[in-house]
Amino acid sequence: MNISFSPPFIDQQVIDEVLDTLNNNWITTGPKVKALESEIIKLTGSQAAICVNSWTSGAIMMLNWFGVGPGDEVILPAYSYCATALCVLHCGATPVMVDILDDLTINPEAISEKITSRTKAIIAVDIAGLPCHYNRLNALVHSEAMSSRFIPENPKQAALGRILLISDAAHSIGALYDGEPAARKSDVTIFSFHAVKNVTTGEGGCICLNLPESFNVPEEFSYLKMLCLNGQSKDAFTKSQGASWKYDIMFKGFKMNMPDICAAIGLAQLRQYSGELLPRRKAIYLKYLDAFQHQDWCIAPLFSDHIRQSSCHLFALRISGITEEQRDEVIAELAAAGIQANVHFIPMPMLTYFKTLGYHISDFPKSLKHFSCEISLPIYPQLRDEETDFIISQVLDAVNRKVALREVPVLSA
Image (cartoon, rainbow, N blue to C red; front, side, top):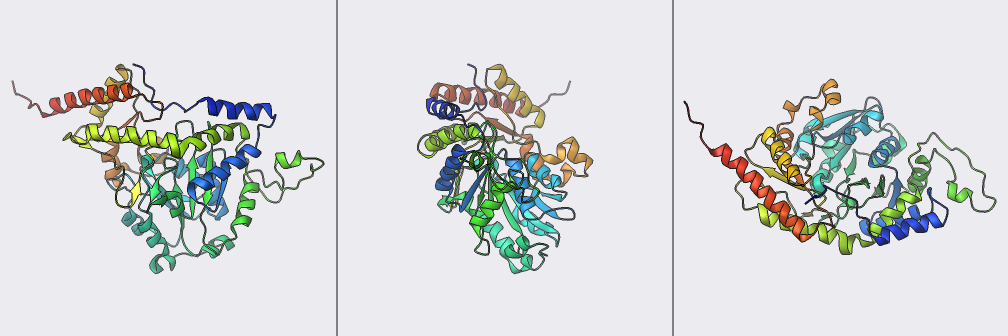
């Protein structure tokens, strides 16, 4: 077999939606983006949605919106993709990394130890589709002890009056928390629609707002729509209508808007997501769980607990007791059998650039421990039953052989 890790879901509905965009001769930001934003609001129950060209762009925009800059600190997990920290650095602020819990999400207690008067935001990462512990995080940022340390330096920060809680929900569209969309559990939730995500636009992302009453959300939405388009008072689609060509530049913005040609892909997928695509992901996830969780070497990823349910973006299998080298050998054996597996993620302090900034993996022992034995298995709606059966059999064979070798005593000469 030849089983890819995470190909995009492209069916006739996606093709038809893209062709509709091409046939209408409007491919940049326009009606498809507006429709996609409306569908995201339906799915998440958020106050507003702003589609952008990547998760990273969305994060940079929202840190900029909140006035995060030089001298400020943003707390985030060491166990994440580099973009979680790079967006902070691009704003001139300092990423303050903390370790994770055994469920791979950020440790709230570690956060509380790192909050200072310079802390302006927390970026909580929903790893593999599992939401972070948002009740604990919200209790932390709303607590009197932490609010008293917060020093607002602009009107947005004064309106919030505390640390901004941002959800890095790149993996977790459709995840649940307390029986409702997890996207509603933070001030700002940012999705990724990169090619390998549950919903893709090729490249893209979306900012969802869930702000307190001290904010005028329609005004913030309008501002952010301009911010992602160079601070321009009218987008290209509005300018194209009749004699409405005149525009103004209201402030220094970015060029981070999503085009319609990309939104069309995501729009067709999102309309099928809750009823078809997400249930299929869950079925594969639970099939893997049933196959592996009774093996004594298996550290099973969490599907749900009494509060949270994963969006099943990744099946992050961890193998107890093996080394990083042995993990890599298992991945190589799967590749030889025609199965593409992956690892999520190399902790940022292990990457060259972050080492030069002074981060040390020894400060994040759980991040290193879980990275060293993690394998992400293919999980996507197009996988057939015979393919998941093959993946399971090959994983069991490869891992059990490694575990057996590990347990054989070394005999002296």
